[in-house]
Amino acid sequence: VLTLVTLFSFNSDDHKGGLRWANLTLKILERAKQRNPFIRTRIMVNFLVLIWHQTLRVSAQEMVKAYELGMKSGDVSGASMAIYLHLQYLFMEGENLSSLQEKNDYYIKQVVKFNKETAKTLILDRMNLDFLIGVPCESFSIFDGMICNEASLLADAFSNKNRILVSSIYFRRHFEAFWGGQYVQALKWSKLASDYAGKVSGPRMINMFLYVTMGIVFFQLYREGKGDIYYDRGKVMLKTLERGLQDCSNDLFNNKLLLLQAEHYAAICEVKKAKAAYEASIQTAKKFSRVNDEALAYELQGKYLSSIVDPQASESYKKSYRCFMKWGALTKAKMIKETHHVDVKAEINPMKHRRDW
Image 1: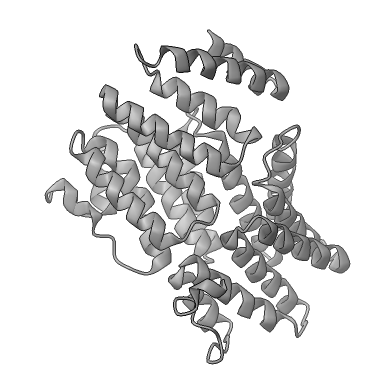
Image 2 (image 1 turned 120 degrees about the horizontal axis):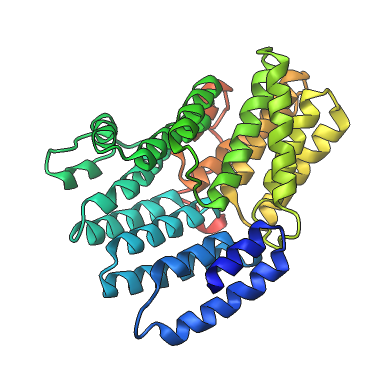
């Protein structure tokens, strides 16, 4: 009952009320955990309410606790959900990708011992990491040849009428296309994912991240001359993000909102405002040590400056390259280098001088 009141309060935009009920719910759960750990209730309260009022690092640690309780109580599916969110939160915070890769490997091996079905979402997470790092995904070996790649995983999801897994696969492809700068493809996969998700909504935090990527996609397509409809859709994503962040103390999306605002200003040729918003997004990402967001902001700043023939564009691309290397996204760094002819001969090797970062 407390959980329902918590979620009703939060979804009714009574964020303070939702936070109050969430804390009360967790206190009661803490007392009752010896009898019943209520893993999924903990997860629900965390990713729908508390995450907006505490840092992602704290929320990530809470998900590890939920995972451990789930494994001890036999709720492997709940534990898998918790660790998936744990890894997603760290990814959003800009955790080094190689470190995330190691964590993903460890948890897949633990979960698959009890239920291979629950490991499928973690496999998708691993595929995103491998794409950005630039290595082939070898984690499908856990399925003993029954599922050997993403195509066969998709076929398996269709065969079992698992709409959530189908949607998750398409969303994974959306993010890969987005990071690859293939905005038309990103739009295609996002639409398919939404169609198969239907009325089933994922964690609100993940959805908010999707609003950012889709907003960027729409504004970029508009600036490429694909049509006014994309400008209108970009504005909808921007307004949705602004509305969703009202009354929330979490700082995760501050720099992302500034970045989307910069894309909006770029679309309407507000040069001074666009430049200021890009720079504000970069500085905010630096403030919170989110090297992934910093890298993306520098890249988009470079694209905008190139479009207005500003010679500072090359410097933006160079800084984007450095940040992607620091994050461990070697695939993306290579794209920046080759697409925008970044001279990296004099660049510091981030693996050799890691302390300097």
